[in-house]
Length: 264
Image (spheres, rainbow, N blue to C red):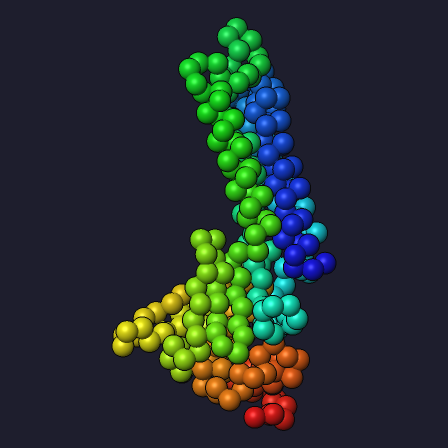
């Protein structure tokens, strides 16, 4: 399963979480009212509430367990109007669970009330609650769909620049702006961010990249950036198999493993 397929696969599981949450509200919750003791009634309600999000999440994690693994590599993109480049897509390991949680929250956004004198739930009927509730659910569903199909954030690099594509646009950093010597190897295996420094108007300015949300091992992202800021003559290999092979070789050497012969 590709990274894109794994990311898009979150959408049906998000819709499932939405449906289960609505089912829990209108069917399961009224059943708990028939339990005499409040302790088992509360336990049953909490269990079904957790199950409504836990089951879709478990199913998604099981289906995408291989696709969610991050390796020390880049995707190579060639052809088209853009120059050859390395690409790190948005990681399914974060987009999937977030989309499922948003789907569940969409189902929780329906404002309901107990039918007077009965053991049923219905949509709230007072004021403008119903249209506002539907609007909020619709907006949450739209955000969920956008999250799964947008492939944001993603990181690309070509021979001229590094570009971070985020939800509000993009940030382009030319190699000449970046200060050599960083970023250092991450202290943690799965850091949320890695920091690089750019020289802007004579001042070193930090830029935090969301390495934890990219489908490339953060340590390899850091190594790639450090390698090309320190070795500008090798930027011609960006977007090529030879360049990727060189990166892997220097990365193994940097990690204390056996290095292959260098093309530098």
